Image 1 (cartoon, rainbow, N blue to C red):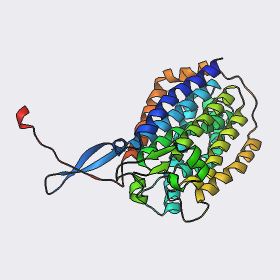
Image 2 (cartoon, rainbow, N blue to C red):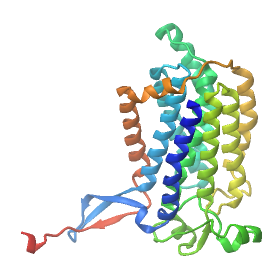
Image 3 (cartoon, rainbow, N blue to C red):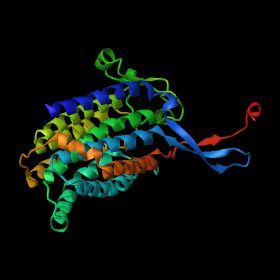
Image 4 (cartoon, rainbow, N blue to C red):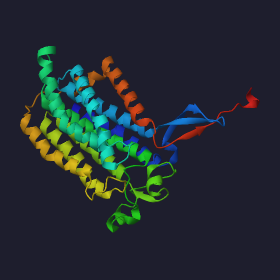
Length: 349
């Protein structure tokens, strides 16, 4: 009963967030949070640094994912300190590495790819967990089941991917085709599933000049699909089925990544099947190898015990530091600029 209540609460929190975001974020107002003056110009105005909702939603998605991982692993009896170390090292590899892969694929110096980060995390994650498990037992006298952590990381990643699509909607990237270019069956039955972007600083505006046109809302579909996958994966995990939760969430995310790119119009490289799609397909047989190498035994999972991790000051501080780091890393806009001017209201002096 507690497991179903926990998953239902997650769904009730996500539903109103998605409904509002799908309506609001395509508008021009919801791309840039603020501009910070950084350099004074000759004419007296200031050059501004734009902080974006893209960074806000990426940071929020990461923290939501890590929070879910904390709860799941704590439910399985994994120590918080070990998990915080795993996440820190994993992000230390994935974030810089994903930028390098994205630059290689898209030939752009100022870009970031969640798909590349996911591929690196999927490949490196199990072995990193095994390495830390091997070191933790003799030095920290802490032991845990590798598959319990690997599976929780995959479930959390699925939720983070879902919420992270809100960043794409705000920035206007990862967009679909115009509705009038979609198959007739989609135009006829899913005409309501469309975004109309406004603002010439959205990526869809300067890359394709499609602002003002009705665009198939592939990001919204992906957000809902991934989030439902995360909810199902959470339920499997809380019932002690770690391998099933791991493979199901990986199949949902990587299978849909391969299929959904055929419905997207943003640049993903010069190939008909992109490098990101190839990466996503390769993770599926790799996951089978992981399941064979890391066997799992059903253990007791107590979600109520897992929720106690949220009362741990160290966990709260870790999440805050993670949010700030991710926001600073992805929220500083490199492709938009601003000019600011300030004045005094004489009637208020």
